Each structure stands twice: as structure tokens, then as C-alpha cells.
Image 1: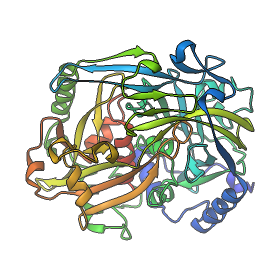
Image 2: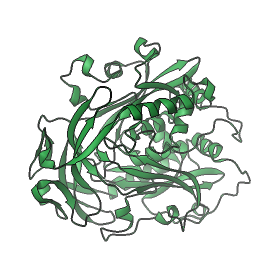
Image 3: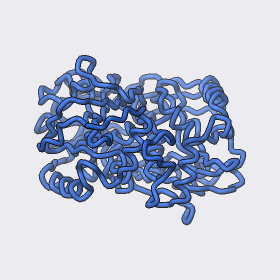
Image 4: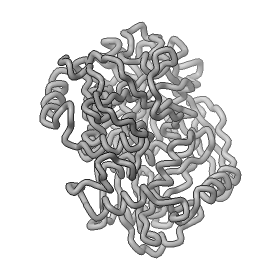
Amino acid sequence: MSEILSRPSASAEVLPDGPRVTRSGLATEGVLTTNEEFAAWLGERETTDRMTVERVPLADLKGWHFTEGRASLVHDSGKFFSIRGADVTSTGPGPRAWQQPLIHQPEVGILGLLAKEFGGVLHFLMQAKIEPGNRRQLQLSPTVQATRSNYTKVHGGAAIPYLDHFLPEGRGRVIADVLQSEQGAWFLGKRNRNMVVETTDEIEVRDNFRWLTYGQIRRLLAVPNLVNMDSRTVLACVPIATDGLPDGSDGPLADAPDPEFAAELWHSLRAADADGRHTDAEISAWLNDVRVDTPLAVGPIELTGLREWQVSDDEIAHRQGKHFRIIGVSVRGRREVDAWQQPLLAPVDVGIVAFLTRRIDGVLHVLMRAAVEPGFLDVVELGPTVQCSPATYADAPPERRPRFYDYVLGATDNVRYDVLLSEEGGRFYHAECRYLVVDCGDLPEALEPHPDFRWMTVRQLTAWVQHRNCVNVQARTLLACLNSLW
């Protein structure tokens, strides 16, 4: 690589991380890599990096086996992950009980973005990575995206590039480091360490990596299925500052997709605690109330004992074709190992994930929901206003559908963001969600919403993401998407 790629910045300014990230966010045309150069590189990688994925019956997966009586599906090493049955009972308000398969992966992985200054502007080392479950196979992932089994080389494959920068002995200056959950409806207790680490070392940039500004990455969130889920959750954790910028900038770019909404978003990012409909302390008390009042028991059950689910040699599927299937795939491609087989969770349709927004006393707020999911370690996390699989409610009457679901699907002129994005392609097959931000104005039922909901400023939501097990992965994606609009 050229000398500039490894040369530390000569900038004499010493700024807090927030203003540095924000200044990088304003550099939407790039500094080190132009947008034209990035597009050419991405096209080359999509031509070069390909993966072949073929269906294989679960019973024939190499390296995997059903335990006795098909109680669970596990890897021969006892590592990686397993598919297990869960018996779920909620005895709080609106008691419910159901059974389902869950992915059990108790180890904590690393999702790490490596940061470095070039020309006084912070850059992030993004990876063009192929995953077996991605519909668009190649997507932009963090610098490091690895489970503990992967980076300890249980598979006997190649080492993870740049991993040392995120381990204690080789770690640089930490900008962000938060333990975050993943999909609580599909994983049991799964968490990853979301990290942003800055280095001043000389870095050899491999062919499938490129340095991009935060501004370039933000703009790419408008492209369907390009910035992957793991990148989005880490981007949601980076600090944003709305003041103290060295160039005197006081808000969103003039070329924002919707300048008026961008200005309101910027104002919400800098809102004081007293400017919110609820204070941080009130939100904390509400969330803890819901956790205490929602006893949720998740117990083990054999896969063959699951009501409403059919376990066969080929797959695990819901008897009415709802929710998802567990399928097997055989993979060949350029990764840590060249070929492997594994199970994947395949949703039956495209999910709907949406934020409702409105102004309260002149400040933009986002409507958050207390999301109860069986895989959460703390039972409840802050989730989007709407988060569901439409197939589940295809025949349901309006009163049985999620609150605000029909309003979101019917929105037109008041939609501020609407992009199809992939979920994690290493565990899910063609899992996509339509992510939306919808301005609801004075919608009557949203003015004083159901007790499961609370209005929060964008500043409050950004602060809550810094706490573990508080904001779910879908809401973190939408926060990253909100930050693409200024």
C-alpha cells in the first residue's frame, strides 16, 4: 500500500472522541479513499470474492449431529453453537406460553472497528466480507467479526486479521467497548463485544479492507443490503458530539436527504435531559418496572418435544409455515477455511422494523418499546416501535396485530427512511428486514401511548446504547440509520 496508508496523522489538534467522530461523519466525500475509488474496489471484490452455498439435509451435515432422540443439533467439537428447544412461559401481564428452537451460543464474540486518523480525520477499517446466509453475499463488515471459537481456531483455519488490536496485549486506545445482545427471538443469551479501538501503528491494509470515514459509511446505509448487521451495531456505539467541532459546524449537512428532518434530528441529539418527555431516571425506572413485572421462564426441551414444530432429517420447521426454519448448508468460499457445513436459521418472510418519531415541545422524539424476548439475559430491552414478522399476523384481526403495525405499513409521505437490510449472515439464511423511520405527527394513539412504550430523545437513546443489555440489535440498527440522515 502507499505510504499515506500507514503514516500517522500530522494534525496538531487534540479533540475528544465525540467531535472527532462527528467531524469524520461530515466527511461524506472521503479523505483517504474517494467514493469513486471505493465503488471500484467494491465492484472488484464482488467479482473476486464468491461463495457457493447449497442446501444439505440436517442429518447429513458434516461435523454436526443430532444428539440421542434428536434432542438437539450440535457441532462435533462441542464448540461454535447448537440448536436447542426452549419452553417459554411468561406469567406477567398478558400471560403467554410457547415453545420454539433457539440458537445456543454462550461464548462472547468480538465485533471490532479499527480506527486511525489520516489528514486529521478519523477513519475506520471496513472489511468486504462474504457470509453464507447473505442474499447479497458480500457486505461491509467491521474490521474483526469473529466468535471465540473462530478466533481461537477451533476450525483449524487461518488466523483472524487485525485481531490483536482488540485483545488486551495489543489493544490501542479504546473509543467504545460495550457488551450487546443479538436477536433475542432467535438466540439464547447471545452477546458480542462491540468495540472501536484507535491505533497509531502502521497498518498493512489487506485487499479486502479499506479505510473509510464515518461520513462515507453513514451514506452507505442508504444502500440495501450493503452495511451488515455487525457493522451497524458497532456504529450505533460510537460517540457523537453536536458541539465543539473545530470547523465551527453547527449541524447537519446541506445535502442531507431531508434537511428539515436532519436539523430536527441534530437538535434532538443535543437535547438536555430536561428537554425529553421523560428524564433518563424515569426511563430507567420504567424499564426496571417492566423487567420486574414480566417474569419469563425459559427452560430446555428436546427438539422433538416442541409443540407446533416438526423435526425431520431435512429441516426443523413450524407446522403452519410461520416464523422460521432451521436448514443445513454446504459452503465453499474464501474464508478462514475453504469449505464447511452448518445449520442456518431461515426466516419465512421479510421482517418489519420501525421507529415512530414526533416532536414534543419542539424536540424530536423516538417511540421506544419494552421488547420482551426469550433470549435476552435481562428479559426486556429497549426495542423499536414496531418489530415483527408479517407472516405471523397475516390472518390476525387488527386488535391482534402489534401496535402501530398497520400505521407503519400504510405510511407514505411521512417516511424518513426505508431501506432493506440484512441480518447476520453467519447464522441466518436470507434474513432481511425492512427498516423504517416514520414521522407520526399528532397521531392520537401515539400522543399518550400504551404503558409498554416511552418517548425518548435521540440523545437519550444514544446514551442508553452505552449500557449493556439495554437496547436491542434492531433498535441499534435504526439508531445507526437515524445517524445516516444528518
